[in-house]
Length: 66
Image (cartoon, rainbow, N blue to C red; front, side, top):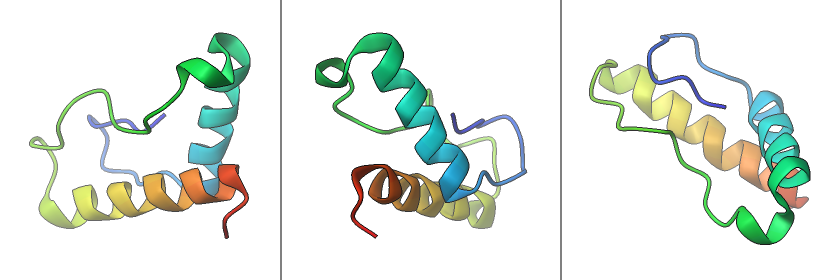
C-alpha cells in the first residue's frame, strides 16, 4: 500500500508485498492496476514522484521484471 497521507516513501519491496497480499486476498484476475487510493495532491512534488517510482519498481519486482 502506498500511503498518500504520509511523506515516508515506501520501498519497492513493500509495494511488491502489498500487491502480493492483494492478489492472494482478491485473486490475481481481480488485481489489474497498481495505483494509490487517491491523488498525491497533499504531498510535495518530490515525495509524490518518489512514491510513484516506488509503485512502478514494486510492480516490476512483483511481476519478476527487474
